[in-house]
Length: 132
Image 1: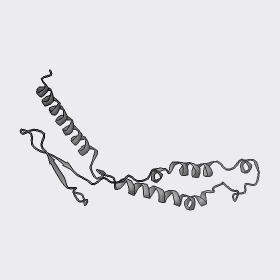
Image 2: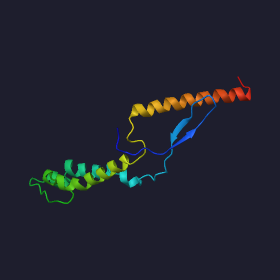
Image 3: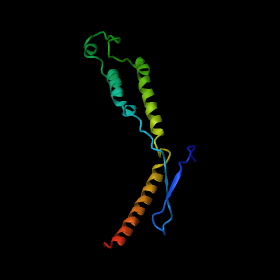
Image 4: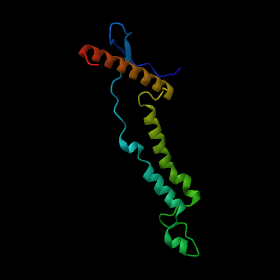
């Protein structure tokens, strides 16, 4: 069971013989801004600074770890903190999206039910219009 409240439901009857189809009605939620999920450039920059020291560092015999742009492994935790916060915000934003509490199997079962309902409705329309 989930701790999330169930959304109000609306009932739609497709035909007199069919049981009513119950669809959740939710107020539209605004999507998070795209910047919420744009953390890959920051991750790339962080990894580049960690893995590839500046050219002058790799050519000199005495590596100056204080050179701008170079990231020593001891500095990684501090430098990655901002990226970690961005990832946490993105994860929280995704968790608020509709149907995130439902499993893939539940969503696939609903899709199959809806596709069967659509097929039935198309068949009824063909019968009404007299098309084979």
